[in-house]
Amino acid sequence: MTSLLLQLTDLHIREPGKLAYGRIETAPYLTRAIDSILRLPQQPHAVVITGDLTDFGRAAEYDHLRQLLAPLPMPVYLMPGNHDDRDQLRRSFADHTYLGDIGFVQFSTAVGDMQLIALDTVDSGASNGLLCEKRLAWLARELQLHAGKAVVVAMHHPPFQTLIGHMDAIGLLQGASELEALIAQHPNVERIICGHLHRSIQVRFGGTMAMTTPSPAHQVCLDLSPDAASMWTLEPPGFALHALPAGERMVSHTVASGQFAGPFPFHDGGELID
Image (cartoon, rainbow, N blue to C red; front, side, top):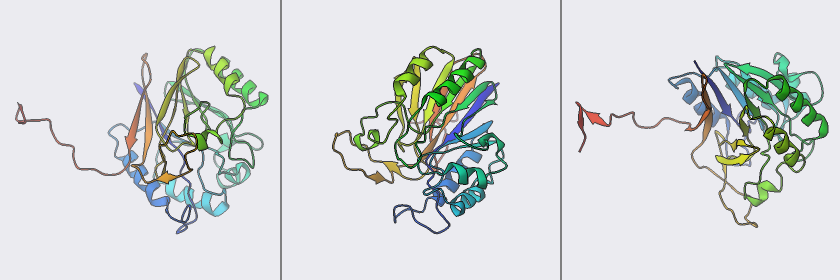
């Protein structure tokens, strides 16, 4: 069996009809992404959403998000980002008991043959993230507990420099080096999957691969100048599918959300098309 974990991130859902940044209605983009997920030939065993579920962490935004996510038939795991409110998230999704009752939103759950470990990087009231000793100690215990199993660590803020200066300035500002040292002790960690950047980015980290995933709506502009302006763009949206074949290495696919022409055959009646 191939275990399939689908990752959405940075939804920035607002109240119905409200525009994010005064320009973009994010809800229809999420609906298109969910339609794309439901059309996948192999359905994921679970969906994890790695933060910035809403734009302001308001009850009406989470209520809207619940309605938008309703068509997904598989388990959906929610994580907070810097645009979220932990307490309101728990109140609005009280049936999601893995969110806990108080404190950090951290949890560990099996998805097929892999173990998903969700790590809370939110620094309340700030756009940047951090990992304190308490959060890292919790992760160390979970990694030890699942030492014999393929592990995916999910977090909102990426623990690496992306070279997009204005985003690195609000990245993971504390705990990245400690995290890398910890991950390096556990070669069964197949991926560190992150959000926050609204782009597909990959880097080697602690002996494994760390990566960010596009938003189903707007993307951060790709400009590696240290003084580049903080800007977003309507580049093609997407999500990620992390696939773990039994006894093999994980393969991650970045998937464009939406409907496109095709599929078309490469061959016509057994002959290569000229």
